Length: 413
Ligand SMILES: Nc1nc2c(ncn2[C@@H]2O[C@H](COP(=O)(O)OP(=O)(O)OP(=O)(O)O)[C@@H](O)[C@H]2O)c(=O)[nH]1
Image 1 (cartoon, rainbow, N blue to C red):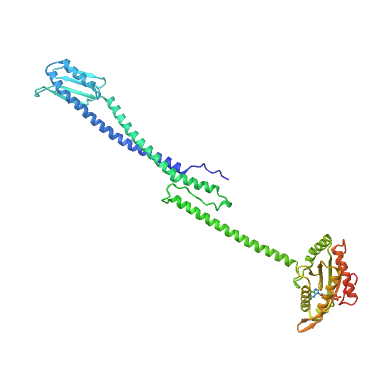
Image 2 (tube, rainbow, N blue to C red):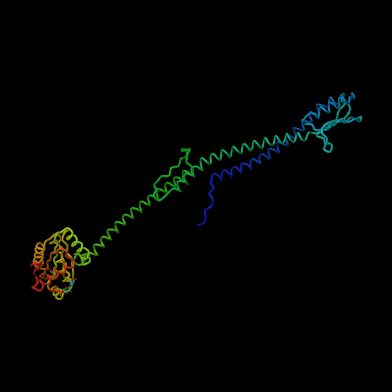
């Protein structure tokens, strides 16, 4: 069997995907925001530098006009002490140059260039150049950008946490409950109901519909199994009764309804055994219709069958029900077993059967047939086997035949 791929929770996957998506959105929005912020900061910074420069113009104008180099230099020094200013340069039209600040700005264009007018304002007496402090500006922009990105990151984290919490609560937990339930389901526990613990019972969602479908399926399967169980029980019962019937039929002679030889081979040894064990009497009667061949020869086989059925019915009616039993031993031979009977009682019965046989004719095709039978009667002797008992009864029957038929012969008769 191929090994199954590793387990991956749907909720975890969704959370991962949403986290990645949120991070991408955050990076994109944060980037756009950072660019806009940079531009805005640059514009504001330039404006601030310009304001600072303009504020210095009056003092510089006076100092240059009064030819006070120390005052000019002091103002230039003051300018570069401002964090926004990296380098400042004042050039007088008369030649002197005043500068302060970090080096390396010469190669860059100045941020602000302003003419210095004379105090009465009629002529230009110098020029002020200011370079913005790029390092300070960079730090400012970086701090702002980081603040913006941090805000977005925090927001993305919050969104992820909320989504994770909702997914875990609304998706993962119920799905896990259903998966656990399905994994533990066995044929004998199918009737155990699926109960989902949902946090918000006021609304239904797909999970509830899935659970309901599952419960319906469970009910259907349960019902189907019950139906199959009932059907199997019915069929088993039918089969058992059919087997019983087949067994019964296999022991019964189809023509007369008496037991057949097979039944006798099974039942007689048991009767003999019981009789010996409990020291109870047991007798048998061998009966044989006289000159039955003539019936067949003169009236046909069907008429013979009719006679056999009629006589068998008469014998069965004359016996104790549920105690005595009759076997059709051969063609026109009947073997009658009489439990709990002494030979005397068996002889008495044999005489009765003889009388019953001849008492009324059998009516065949409008003709009355007078039938007689001969009987051999024997009682089980101590320690005697079934075959010996039968042989003795058969011998007595033979005697009855030899001694004229239509008579009864017993052990002492
Ligand atoms: N109709 C019919 N006849 C059967 C059946 N089984 C055996 N028979 C006949 O029974 C007759 C038995 O004849 P025999 O054994 O000579 O005996 P019997 O004619 O009765 O003479 P005794 O017994 O000596 O009085 C035979 O004709 C068999 O064909 C059966 O099932 N149906």
